[in-house]
Amino acid sequence: MMFKFLIMVHVCAGFPLKCPEPAQWSTRARGHCPDPSKYFCLKNDHINGFSENCTVFDFLQPGRKHVLRGGLDADICSSERYQPWPITFYTNVSTNCIFRKSACNEEGLVVYDNGNRSTDITCRCDYTRGYDFIVKPRNRCFCVPSEEDCSCHLKMCPKTTDKLSPGNTKFPFVKK
Image (cartoon, rainbow, N blue to C red; front, side, top):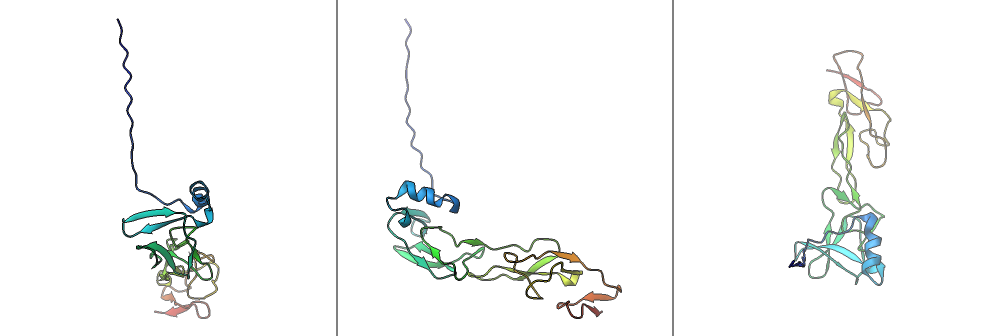
């Protein structure tokens, strides 16, 4: 005589909520809410995680984003992101400020200014090491990587005793 046993195991696993990436935001909203325009997924400070809901559609001024702290509250963009004017942060689009700050990590580039919550970082060519812009940017001292070409090249000075100056467009070389 042969006995067969059937064992059924049910597993229920939980995971911390992660908000959808911007490209998937509308798909999640349509699948989760009767009115997709009211979907939000925001950082929730009370649970140290994220919460999603279908009850609100709101916006904030540039440089700020919504968070949940009992109700909707404003928080500034993180140091790695920015929200420029006139683009407005909408709760039904993202949980982060829209743009990630650029990096000044190409050869010869250094940070000119870290920007702020509503502006991107700016870069300059490292003239102290002989680098100059390939294409002159709108501002002669720095460039904005998200808006223009910030490529640098090593510029050779006619004399080894000469060095590039910070504003190297009109009088490019200074004697050392």
